[in-house]
Image (cartoon, rainbow, N blue to C red; front, side):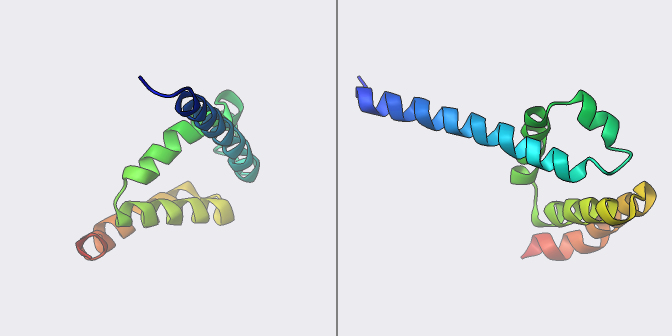
Length: 103
């Protein structure tokens, strides 16, 4: 049977992870709130749910997928142009994918 201190440590770690997920979602929402296309999503989706969707996708993605996503976010942040951001992300995946994922 597990020790009581191990059980308390597990509960504390779970509480910390939930708190960090909620607070990081809030800060990401603050940074993305000025993008017009994302505004309705942020208003209807809590920050913790946003992070719960985003973090596993980043963690499970390959190097090319992570770089493509970073390019899309940066271009959307600076230009607010969905077509340019999406096109750049697709180009990174198609052109850089075989080279980045082979390493």
